[in-house]
Length: 178
Image 1 (cartoon, one colour):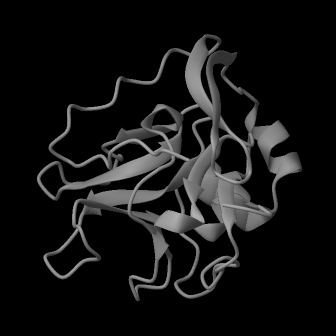
Image 2 (image 1 turned 90 degrees about the vertical axis):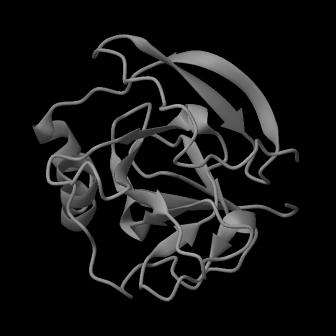
């Protein structure tokens, strides 16, 4: 599978999320990480009561209210099986295990997303605009996933950005080949 070049914080900003009720452009992937097609799909919009009934309590707090799961508690923290991670709320393909690494901070870390079409990166309500950290969310359903920030000089090669993601916001889709 051919992946897009890794985004950096110096790249142009992602387009803003469309208003509710519209469609979004999503890159579809097979569970082995290979690209399928790009399509316009309806945004997934549910009420707070619907999300609360569909998600376990911690997943609800993380994905709908921007909470963070406790460090070193994530289900996928040590996952090494080939496959991709999909949004827990809508199934959109977000990250691949090829780009996963152990940053030692207690959360899932990725060098890049499968497709920037599938993510939104925004300044969260409690974030400092000069800190170089953005909130990462699913473009299709607006689920909060975690953070994206500039890597330190000792980050994994070849540098760039680091996605620090809560396991509880994802669903792992294993692949027989990847």
